[in-house]
Length: 339
Ligand SMILES: [Zn+2]
Image 1: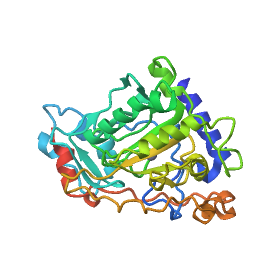
Image 2: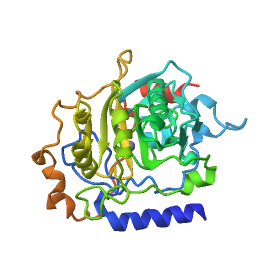
Image 3: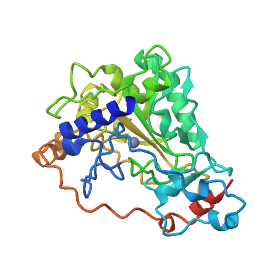
């Protein structure tokens, strides 16, 4: 029942918003993505695949466990990483790039905190680098003070060992990305079914040119601002309509605005991206966001152009070849094989 509803909602969402349906995860905001793949609607719930042979306990009669365990370099990395239920028992480190890497020694954001709740528990994507977990806990703690919300609802972080996912995001691979809903946490604990079924609310107007005044409040802006002010947060991705509202409402305290970057989708959640931890040499970061506020009409013009707002969804081409294990940093193989 819940899943059916979610699928129906996902399909409706797709039809309604076309290519805006939370598309390609940001590599670098401000540039048009090469193409908009089939939506990354967080509500889209593809059925989980059967576990990989490596996850099936070996029977006596089977070949030696080692052979079964050895992942093939040309195996789709999303299937290997998507099958892992627990983190790699290794020191914590982010390996590779946000959209091409993995995560060792992940920790979980507890599904319930005083001022946060994790959504879509069935996805098992509440894992991250300890620095991300700490940052989210710091943010959640501030939210009642800065916004008067009881707390935040937290969407996807990363899989237990990071890496590409079977569904959704291109990024979120190294435990430094997190999605936070633009819906206040209710003043009660949601049950697991509600966390699967509850729909997130778009804060953007139907014409995509501004926020929806019936939904958007200054408190939404205050939550995004609090996230951006964390010195370890490097970028935040939001829909251009949200960026426009933040620019308008920021007042004189504007030093954080440059971190908030317009991107496709991101109208019912915002995406927090942390810089690489200093002691993680295998983590490939991005240059810090440019210093300019990005609030001038010219800065946002592209996002409000007909080319973007009236873009027709591209016909579905042949599916893209999945990233293989061999394409990830070599250390990711060890992350996969670790106990
Ligand atoms: Zn995201």
